[in-house]
Length: 106
Image 1 (cartoon, rainbow, N blue to C red):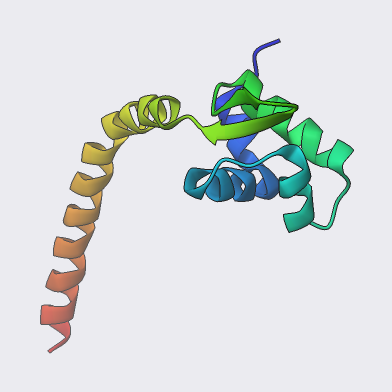
Image 2 (tube, rainbow, N blue to C red):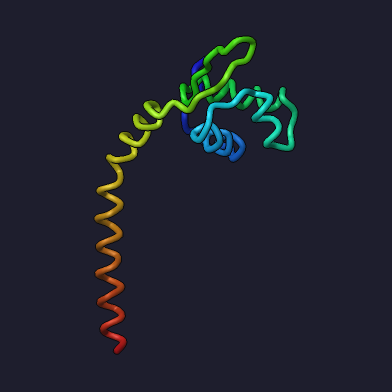
């Protein structure tokens, strides 16, 4: 079953895993060493991240290294971009209102 990207990044441990492997590809054992949890627990997080395509496995000998999938994150960022303009417009309007209120108090 394919996971939803929002569910994947909602968990702080999974966000931390993404941050780590964005810097350097890691094995599940190497990831488990960075967290206070078992390799099995880390593997469950890896499974969710892999199912929503935020990470990609690469076999190297007997080890599997997980890499950050920047392309998938770019897709997510592109989706968020549709809201950015609206947010910026609303923040700019709020700035104007606050400036007006501040001037009136002087």
